[in-house]
Image 1: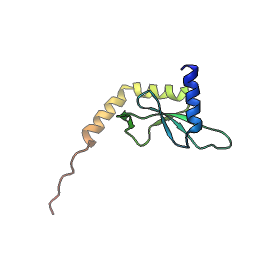
Image 2: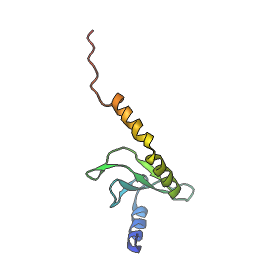
Image 3: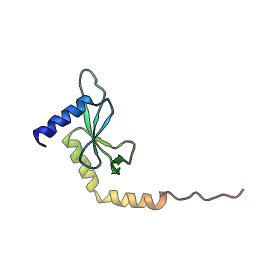
Image 4: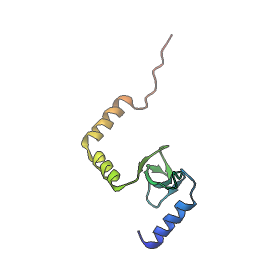
Length: 102
């Protein structure tokens, strides 16, 4: 990130209201400013898949540190996650509820 981009980021965060999602040039990545607490400002990176520039989930994954990002990477690289999602979709996908005759 160059100096101008850093300045633009700081300015955008300063002008944002608490819990405002600031879009970035990275698809599915937002900056979220939280309310000030004890004179301390916290800002998170939110990962939230998007469609047509709009988040697909109400809430994404909030990251504050590189260690959190690295832990999420490890979790996502686990092959069992893919298997788990496949089984869940197989048994619990959006299927029409059967009509029960009474």
